[in-house]
View (tube, rainbow, N blue to C red):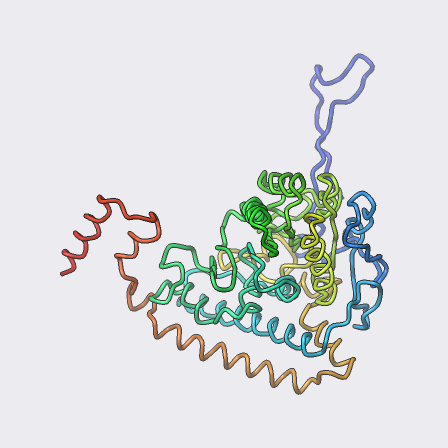
Length: 428
């Protein structure tokens, strides 16, 4: 689908042979508000259809993985094909729990914003497997460079919900000490780098961290996440170039959830070829994977991690998913896409798919699922109460103003010491 810009041709635009002037190609959005959802543009592969190459495979030899779509779970929720690496039921149940907790946390924080208790929020509904499956496929010491829709990374690595909630409230427990927009979390103990609103910067930072780790002889790798819209930024290409040249032990993820706020993925180049296909141009393997298939995401991430640890270099992963909710609490998706778009998304819901797979395998039941959901809702409630006890916006800013002088210089300059002391004296 496209639009060609045509119009009256000025005399200078028509050659002596009567040739027409050049025309621009404008990517078209498949469905706008009031239209029927249309995912006919989405290229799918049958579950189990794509091969699983050796970890030392050359990018030039596995181009089909960048064009196709790695899937493990078929339409009946059965695992098939070479990418099916059987996981213990306990591992799958842990993954389901992490995804359910992430969604329960999201729902509660969205309601909290509507109540005016926090100023801003971003949900990850429909994308939980991207974060949870990848975090579980990596080692605890690996360094993560997330986007602002990767709260599942924090959940999977055991960061308490209270810590995330305090950051949203900018209260005494705020890990960022009031210096970051809500949802821009980080965690030193969990090895999760600070989130940046300028998403593409995570790529060169992750590559640099991976290069430094290799120079020091460490065995940890790095992983970074950006959206498909951010792949149009220069930092994306800078990161791939350095990762390719130095074979940095890094996994570079493009989360293609089809929308960069209100801009359809075709405007970032997704109409021409897959985002994973940009990797081979740099000599980097590119793999396009069903981002709503927990088993597929886990298997592909594990393959890329093994490749990086074996000094075979980076991998570019495109995780094909859908942003079920608004871009943020400042966005209204009904203004640019059909209201029920997600209900027609052909790759389904990641939580429901893993749940049905476990039930089919005899490891889970509907009643167990409902009980776990209720338990996690109660956990979110108790965490919120604990976070509120550390201060709320209604109570006024409870952060110590003296914190503004810290964490900038290793040794505080004299002029800042004077300002800090003057502030302390003013407060008595």
